[in-house]
Image 1 (cartoon, rainbow, N blue to C red):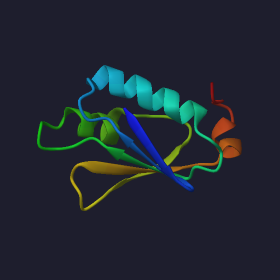
Image 2: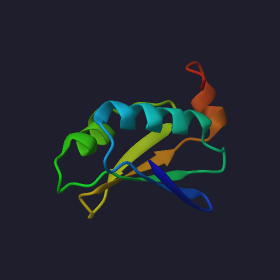
Image 3: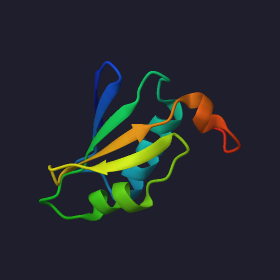
Image 4: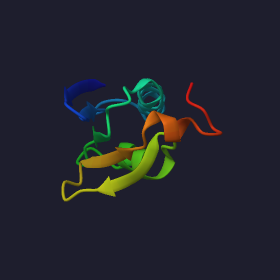
Length: 94
């Protein structure tokens, strides 16, 4: 997974990962994400199959994720993040 950060937005590219590896890496990244990060653009691709796209859009769950946005680019999904105070709530971030 590669990471590019620009202010409050981060781009994570999970091309070439297995579903399990990508899920583990994204979950770990979200758990450690800086509080000022409010949006994550997950680049999962779409031409090599839909496994990673479906994992991000349907299976990926984390207290930090406020919402998921499908973009006009079928190879990416945007994650809008809660702040760490709200995400910590009763679930906690580990």
